[in-house]
Image 1 (cartoon, rainbow, N blue to C red):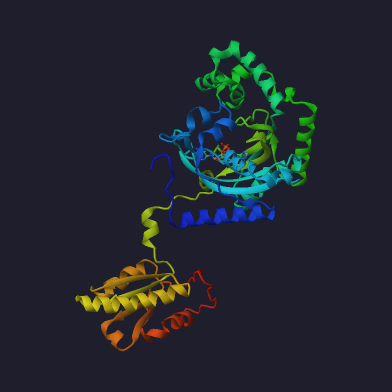
Image 2 (image 1 turned 90 degrees about the horizontal axis):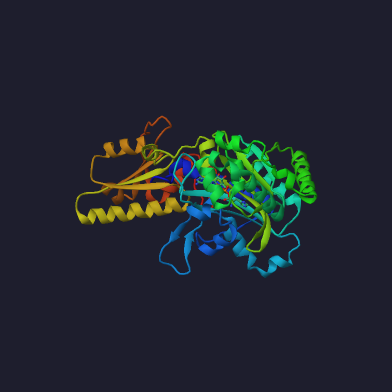
Length: 434
Ligand code: HAM
């Protein structure tokens, strides 16, 4: 579908593995998983993202008929803060609460590569911890994960000062840009009109760069306390061996940010991870980030698998049990039952198994399943059933079928495991790879 990314097969498995690894990294920092609803009250975002942010002004999907109004969540921070702010325990914890999450987010965007209407985020929030070490900690988590996945990024950091300092700067910048309004790009004029002047600093358009030449700088408005905090953050990042550069034009699109802001930019020119500190989201402070999973996949060259490629090799490393029956119902039922029994037993032992109940030519069916990457073919026909046996063929890596062996029905699983030299006994629910 336009605006979203379909994903299947091995690419989807890589995504699941990526999410699982992210959780493992987070748990070494003692971050706990959290899941919040995809549908949230519109109010949760209206209260926290800033009325002038692009998300609030034009990017949220509303569910029309609900009262109070529900929306598809555009990001994770506000929902997580809403969930945790209700916890009485939070106010009693001196070290705050640390959580990580993954899930689908929705924004009304003009779709393009790396920008979708439905996308997946991996994120962390370190709530109610005001220390600068927690800012460095979340950046370190993101950096560790990106480095492990060999995603090359550039980390930009900035300080936005306190909420008051940010507001004062925004006003002075507005006064500066007012007489230069006609020279601004269309998008920057919209941002000016909406009251989010600071976002104009982010623009890379030449007309905006011209208008901004000589403009007041955010750093001039950042007070001593925030400045010292920022110096400490830089020191901590250096200590962790994390490369970064300070970018005074980095302001972030969501208005809840104060103090630390950061972005990891990928080779394809978009931020793969972004975050920062907030003073008041649902009444609580914190620091966190979100990684765009689809953007990561693009950076890593993981393509959404082609439907055909996935299904060409759909039986890779698995077993097929073929029931060869006559055309009458009795034969179908009898053979079908014993095929299903065998399949159940094999699956319980962790083997990946497909079935084919067939009246056609055996050679043709075997040809097809061998092409699909199957490793073992088990055939049960009328005669076999009468003699309590099945025919088992092993397929070599080159797709050659062995001479069929006649195996007692009850010993098929054992035979497969011995012949395929399966050393590992699967625990319940675990898969055995042949
Ligand atoms: P954000 O910058 O809006 O921040 O989004 C974070 C990341 O989500 C982006 O860097 C990008 O990788 C991905 N992303 C955003 N929009 C799209 C889209 N339309 N299509 C594909 N990927 C997208 C937040 O969402 C904050 N909640 C992050 C945060 C957590 N700050 C503090 N805690």
